[in-house]
Image (cartoon, rainbow, N blue to C red; front, side):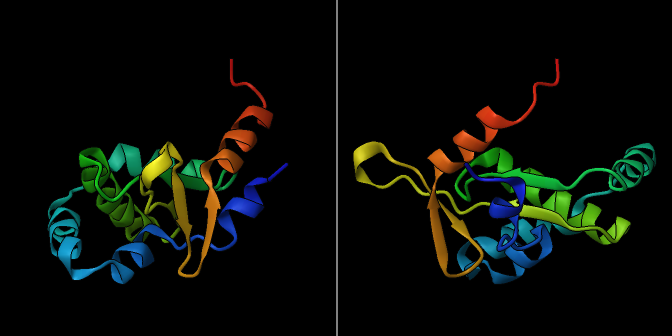
Length: 124
């Protein structure tokens, strides 16, 4: 069963993910990054949480919400000097399986993430 380390060890940060992104998407994501103004209260809370937690964002490049959220998270990375791991690049190939790009060269199937999520303690 995968652990958080298995999933994040090769994941780029949000900033690195945008830097390595194809030019087709990159300019739009950088526009959001440049225009985002973090809330000071949110910054303080995230800085506090970053002492005890590691932040990981799961997304697909084609997702409209991701196009807004990931650049904003990249801005938080810069402001707080922390790493927010970007587990993105999900594609939807034929046959209905989703795959995720981890770093530049490796791929793992989404079922590993589902397995990790099922094994994580409940936050009820």
